[in-house]
Amino acid sequence: MDFTLRMDRRGRVLLPKRLRNAIDVKPGDALLAHLDGAVLKLTPIATLRKVDGFLILDLPGKPVLIGDAVAIVRAARERELLERVKKK
Image (cartoon, rainbow, N blue to C red; front, side):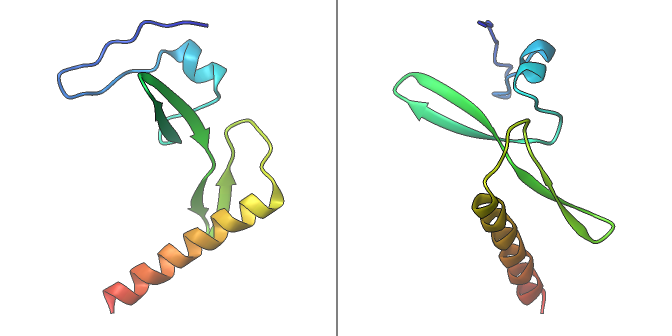
């Protein structure tokens, strides 16, 4: 599936709906950008959000290994703890 994309004056590129649906991303989802020479690769990554005090792991339509999920949760908790320490 090929798409021609244009960058606006602010450097933003819009992903067409068919492309967003194909890689199962929604507004606010995180993408990992990898540059290999002149090739830019965007990969959806799992993100965490808090809902009613619970951490929810949003997955971009593919399974995540338990170890990876645990690492993501630990990193988020560490960031949260660091933010609390900085505020004190």
